[in-house]
Length: 283
Image 1 (cartoon, rainbow, N blue to C red):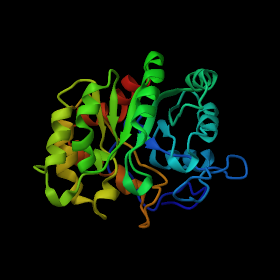
Image 2: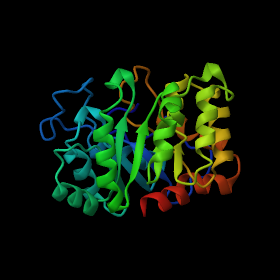
Image 3: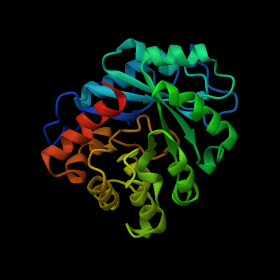
């Protein structure tokens, strides 16, 4: 993770990053004196406002980004929306909503570039949401043309598979399902994830390698490659900057340099970094 405002890299991309490449999973945090963190948060991050995110993307050579609302801000999406408005041509967003989110707020977020909603199912971050609320939120997002983003972990993919299949909207699974790499590509959760990708509404992010294993992240490669083979037109990539709840420092350039290992062919990298996010997010 780079220091605030740092624009120069100790490392460089080892492949030609295509124009308009997209970081399809990143966050902004605060600044807390303007956008306070949620009282019910499970963690309190360091401020990483939109200026720090923009500096990271300049360093990596990325032209677009999807800014995903993180749980530390709860359903107060103002920091994320403020970042979208800073560069509407380059940014799209994913919100967190509940029953208190008004229709006017949904319209405002749509205008700002929000294209999906996100729910977290990670036990350490609060566990599964109220499923009635989850379905009500999906019903409100669907007419806007938005998709559902789900953060699951390992067996959570198994537990939620039928719910995912039943949603009448596109679904994006974060971070390769956060499966246990020790179980290998034949583990039950990962096989279920591959099976879900047989549905052309379902997408997956080839992100979160740093949550599966440590540098140089070799254990993540078989999973990313299998997902890309299963759905080359429905995979996305992102940094997950600034890596909430991760205690080990990460160089985002090292994560970017996994892309040619995930996708050795230039055509697959073009889809992963440019074409697929453009299709889903309407760049």
